[in-house]
Length: 384
Image (cartoon, rainbow, N blue to C red; front, top):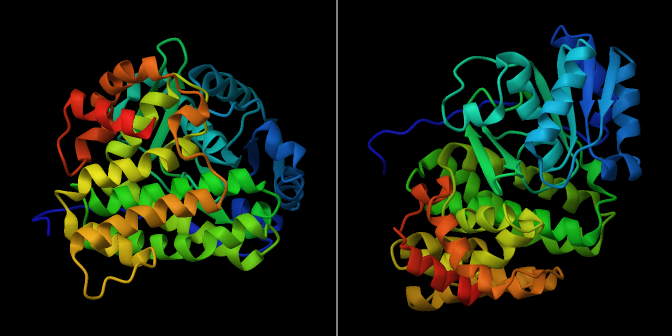
């Protein structure tokens, strides 16, 4: 166990089916009256914004809606959203959607409070003061961004992702309403669910692991292994949807405290160059990252395998770990996700450049096993 660790619970978490219809009361209780909503076109077209807006308008004014958010939040999007919120004189941001709208709102609150540009705040704990209040309403069960102290914003000109880590970045309130995830298509349900699984697994083996994060991560792994297939195959199953929403949130709290590793370093490197869904990338890379790390943390990967439903009795650690890795791969396949980087059109000739980029990604520094550029290239080739 670590001689010293810090564990922060930065967000107040609310859970209730139908909670979206009560958001105005939540905002009012914080003493705010001018809500600015951040979403994306998918949220709007799926009809998920309507209950949020009506819920807010029962108690407070909705002074603007910014829904021009791309699949991967970008610097330009953050600046445009912040300008719109400033002009509307908003006193609280309400982000509705998956990781991109929530990360966009996180970036907006940084700019609204501190000014300047997002790259100025890149890194750990550069931000050291409270920001404009924010409520996050996730419509996917994946990123856990509704509770994380991490914002990831794409610098499109540089072709890379900027990571900002500070406890002040975490939303003040995470409002979990499983009804808002009922219409999420099977493919996105699967990809976001595997994203949550990658958070839990990487957190559990991170060099910054601690008993509090461990317990959340392991529980999340168990919940995802148990409920993701049902959420994908029976989209109207409110129980499965709720369990996945809570699991993603728990994994988010865990990874916000213990951070990521080689899986995310590689997926961030690829995502900065190619328009592939982040959760899908994590799903593809996860078995290979697990295999790479298992040689230095075998006891932890045995525990992960058990949470994935593998019977560990009377067998060697190597056998159990292999079955655990296969259970992750099988879960992705059962949910209809691609299993190779070639399947999402990542070109083979790009792998050396991606290995070099992954080597300097912030996530790599908390991986339990040191990696060379050559080893990362080998891992990428195995995943290709």
